[in-house]
Length: 126
Image (cartoon, rainbow, N blue to C red; front, side):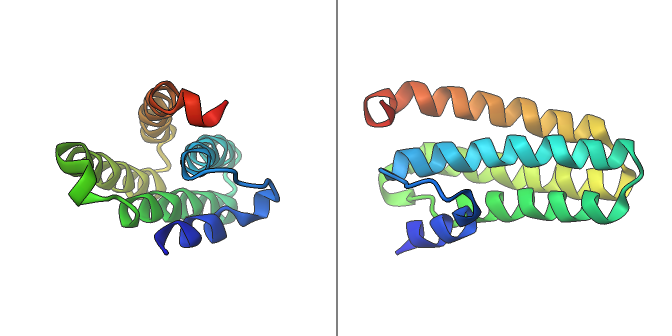
């Protein structure tokens, strides 16, 4: 089951996941938290943690890509594939260039995704 992989990826959070919708919300929140930590690492020239947190963010986007359902999701799934892939590209560039601006772009996109996700799934997340 694909959601099991996503759960394992985010298991350090010891929060019981009630639904797949809640899990996706947690993954987006994890991206935001790790982006903050990656930005702090760049600001303090902490290369080891910068790489660690950017890799964690990339892992979450990779997992989000792997659980997309193209049959049910159709054009939305295709759109998200491009969006997630672009975020991974930005993270790679942020890592090489020590760019907090590129991480900020990822944060802004993820905030939009999280907001939309919460709105669409508000009945499942309550």
